[in-house]
Length: 283
Image (cartoon, rainbow, N blue to C red; front, side, top):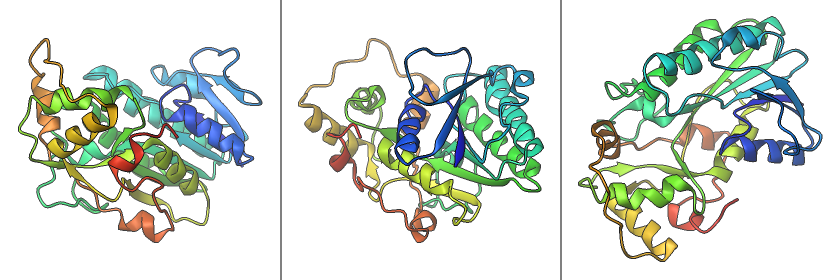
């Protein structure tokens, strides 16, 4: 298969490129400027999601796109340009070149604070008001569903909080947990399982549609923080130098538990079904 990966220099995309190459796929990566020495036998094509007009022809001669690029820390208009307009331009180019499948890496935060967990793929999404990243991801999903046509199938992967051993987000988690009540439950997924799920969903035998991607055991924020501290061997939580930002507090206090029956019905089994099993593993 010839696969175009966006976000290939990122935390998930970088690992995905390696796995796809090991599976024998031809890989093309979208880069803002050529990168020397990072990849062997990987084609680089120049384009920028923040400049949608630069994305014409990047999908030529591609079978599948895995779109992981985006502005995670962008706010307001910037998030809309990168995550919505850039995604729309990429799908336009995919349709123009008859790409068979478009796999979009979305985020579980599109569900917002789940009132009746677990959230299934049919649950109505209600992102937290003002959460620019979640709002832009949901808008991108909606645009893709509207655009998807002809030969191009759409798969949306709604991914829980991603971690691996010593990843920055996981190391910071106990400090953030110490600043909130921590009684709410939330879901995690190891990076290796995200990559495995994405590689699986690229294959034509799996139906297009939305798939939740998470491990088997959601935890309270307090439970997760304790497991992380134990795994890192640090019983102390360093006091924060400043109060937690209001939006981050709301995210940390939201219930985000996912129903993963759909992806499991397609044969997916997590390599790391629980947080404590994956905390010591980078891959």
